[in-house]
Length: 336
Image 1 (tube, one colour):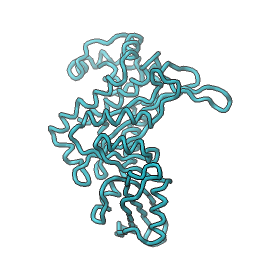
Image 2 (cartoon, one colour; image 1 turned 180 degrees about the vertical axis):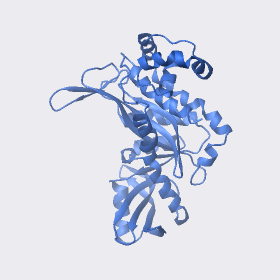
Image 3 (cartoon, one colour; image 1 turned 45 degrees about the vertical axis):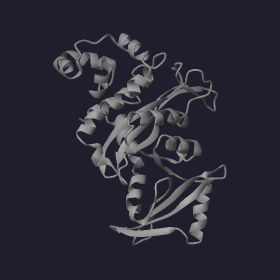
């Protein structure tokens, strides 16, 4: 709780937190249940030993409050879906200090770089500024593995964990092009979720391009102030030759300046949601809401004095990872 308080109060270091402790004693006792804190070394040693999944459980704790206040009810899209959008961010990088959890990259000059990353699942809504962290999975060296962990491997752990924490919700996972692959899609569908992913290449996109050449895409056009918006779609495309049983739907969207013809935005997505003309506007807003995970939680944690990338202490096992998870928990808690 001391470490949680330090991040939620935006202290830049353990030392600063300790110096402010006497002046905050009453509030720390009332809000955090803290009457004393150990020395910096003891704090780090204790947190270093905690498996990150134990801290990730804290994301679930505020969900009863959210549901009691019916907040999730106001954040549903496309007929009742909640959006968890996924993305990874770096939390630590050094060429000098490392631990057994560090991922390792060899630079061109032969020097080794040690780093940690984190994969986050965040609930966003296209028309609301507030975001809610739902889960986070550390991208760190996994016990027994000799190869580096990666974002996709972390998603294999995060998706089942996310489903377990929200068993009754209709979840629509929105992600970038990294996740446009059959193992991830089958993982999501196997957990009873749906998906929207950016598509940049592949057989499904090739089919859509051929349909566009033949003018066989279904299209809808509308105006948004001084811009012309055009969305087109195709359904029941084969994902690829190795997964011919996996059928996906395709949507492309363009925003063009009505006066000078400049293209402001061009996006392409695959999804397993049913697509029709009447839902295209909302679908595009939902698909484009993926940027909120960068702009809201990551930007807040890195640039609004939560010090996500600051090294509070690296430790020998989990310290750096836990010091990245705690700011996530603190921003979630202080939404209320």
